[in-house]
Length: 359
Ligand code: PLP
Image 1 (cartoon, helix red, strand yellow):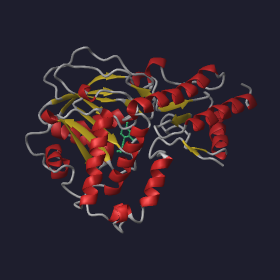
Image 2 (image 1 turned 90 degrees about the vertical axis):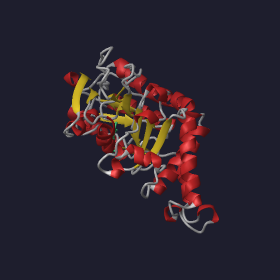
Image 3 (image 1 turned 60 degrees about the vertical axis):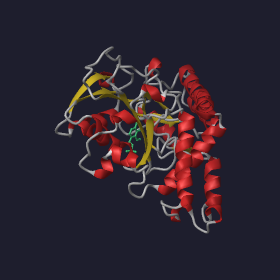
Image 4 (image 1 turned 45 degrees about the vertical axis):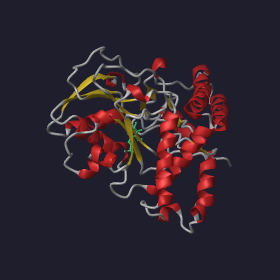
């Protein structure tokens, strides 16, 4: 049976990448060592981390005045690192668009000397849309934080707002390398790797140099400036995850870069949205103008039927389709490496299920 993995993360990786990793697992470039066994100060690993950075710079057209950091702690640690580094003694503005934004807001609020203001929210309707943002904000604020793609709720920002000299900071964990966003529109971008980049354990941070803190942060590991000064090698980085990320970046490049990937991602999403639109059984809880092409929730409106669908889907090899426990229903996460055949198989299965269940 073919397995299609719809997981929201850790998620499906390109098969071609896993095959290369497998072939190099025991002996990387005739070194007699696995990448996992290489010193992070060795020339072989230096080549890997430098290639990973230059490929990411090329794929996202990252300007020279931005640093790329390979860190740990997941996107969740960035919820604290961002305000710690950028907003001490200042006001930080947040857009509340889902469970992950709420966690980012709580982490910032936990800091004594950061003032947090939520400037827009879609919580009134269970985060099923991207809210209207104010045209201007307090120009003394440290930043405006947004979550470009809301993994759990299935919404995404189609357009990145501009607030003059106040930089936009983005949690891009679930749609980095899947949208043609311009890095210049952001002061900071961060993403946990385990969706479109590679294995869990690596966090990518892209930060404009003028935002690197001037004063040391109390904990060295949480200090962007220190991490940047040490080229992400202040301590032992997640070496194997960085190696896989490098292979994924090579794969993205071979797919026509972010533009090629985005086109394919849009087609995959369209196929599923078209099916949902035509269906008499399934509906999307998300407002049309706010829909993500990456995480696509759908429901029947009947919990028992959702459960029956999820059970039947699992038996057919559709893994991890169950919606997040806070939302229910179903959710298909169609990350970059998710194959088109998987979406075709899913929509065929949905049609069959609908027919059998009185649709
Ligand atoms: N932000 C978003 C948008 C996410 O989807 C996730 C995880 O799924 C996180 C943050 C948390 O990431 P991590 O588990 O790497 O801390």
